[in-house]
Length: 219
Ligand code: SAH
Image (cartoon, rainbow, N blue to C red; front, side, top):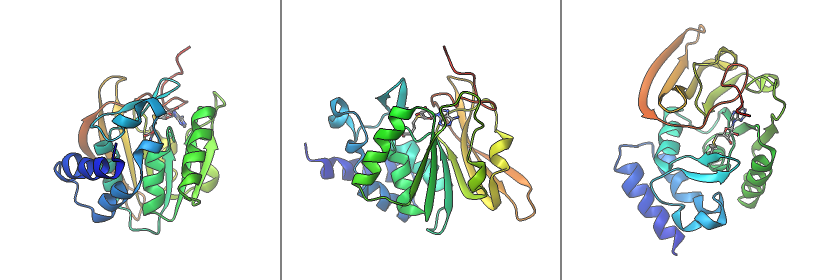
């Protein structure tokens, strides 16, 4: 399998063809090897147009969704970014390539540990990971707020105010909101005076965001 060829094809056919135009996002998607973030058994499918299982009943998002969400954050390189749901660490790696610093929180320890190894192997040392495996722990990373951009890669029942509070003036939040099986990607922009404006992007389907302002964990 020629992974470089497959990745190029993925970017042309799934990302550029569907309307992503941010050159920095496109270059990051061309650069970061998605196949190292999936389980070995799925390596040959790493560049296919789909989400894939990563263990622990979680999934790595579809490449187009990663590109679209990243484009919606309008990163220029100087930002301090918060990600909720490290998962495989693939989206984290894209963010780390495009922003100054990335703070990423994950509630499942084995996923966070594996993601750390992948990010280190790519020498992406501007990523801080936090494991939020305490059931009652609040969503986000209050101590490091405010953030210029926040991305949530799990679906929430509504926009958690705990996250809009952690957004800087001028900051962008991108989050899937809806039921457990049907969500819409929402972008929220905080104005310089702290007003929130929201925009609806595409329909999507993510695993649930667990926590006090998310869903209750399944037994
Ligand atoms: N961006 C990841 C997506 C992983 S799936 C990738 O492409 O690989 C979403 C992840 O969110 C899961 O790993 C899940 O454990 C995590 N998650 C759910 N609720 C969370 C919370 N409150 N805090 C941190 N992570 C959470």
